Length: 508
Image (cartoon, rainbow, N blue to C red):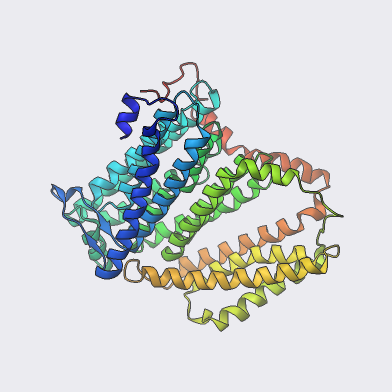
């Protein structure tokens, strides 16, 4: 279908332009059927088409079926949106073709039953996305972003291929289920530990963690559906890789600690930078960097079921955010504030954090918080910091009482939802993903550091309006808005990215 669209572009409003949307809908129906089959028969891997443990095979378990449903649904929505958003574009057919190929590659990736298919699908996703980023090849910013994406994609693919080769040597098979089964039983050769490091490196570059994030924040020159697909699906591939090989990663606690530190740092820095961005799509891009960092932090803490839940929630939210970004700008511009902005002082801020912590403890004990692993308790305390910021707005002196009641109700609802979703994710993936291990000395150090740093940043964010008028704050804002110049330093280190020879566009 995609090749046909590339070789024989139909006229505007041609019937074949609807084929990609129909194919995505078919994939979604297939995902539902797979979920029903999984519920009735349990996890399984299809017969291999190939040899030597490498080829084409489909793995059906809680992780793959969840990702299959998610990618198919987001892809169907994005393709349906693209049919209208790109109507009349001279290269609409080529765009839909590459978008279809990207989705097909992601579907092949998340359902891969062997290492060969995993590597090939990973590389194919990168190639298809590179072509989509060059939909407007005459734009210098688009060419720069595409080149940086191609470089980081190449590094991630090489890292993944290296890790896959090490696992093949370590276990003598390319079957993913067999590798995970041996690793869960405690058979982890030294080559498998090196593979865990290689997979982690591939995930860091694929999911655009700081400081490899530059390309992700520069892809705004591509059509909005590309941003929606990229931020809602493609960058999640790094997290999916870590979740898929969770049993192998748990045997390398040092690798997990590094992932937790990198993820936490990326989440904090990107979240701060996001608050200073004036453009909606750029702010959403930095938000994705922050969310990917938090997801990797969850993986580093061994909370793989929660990381999978994070992928689902972030994908749905971010796809909607990008596709509705134009309407959101108009809605915000139409807001007329009835009075002064409610800015919380020092007292309401302290009250809010104390109330949020008490709320977390009371509700948590009511639903069995004491039985949760320390990592889950620490993660919950980090998430409750966001609840504290919400409560602080309602406790501000200028806030109407209705706002106070609403924020408290929302805070209770958010806390209960966290516990409910956490329990549901653990139940859904039981038997597929390993349980969270007890933290060792290094794990405890990472936990304390993560909670402390997130706490300091949360308090500073809540108190920001109190010192935003200070001259030093204005100067700091400039540096924050530029992402502390990490992307500029990367450009300089890589030689500047000459754009004198623009690459070919996505036309066939």
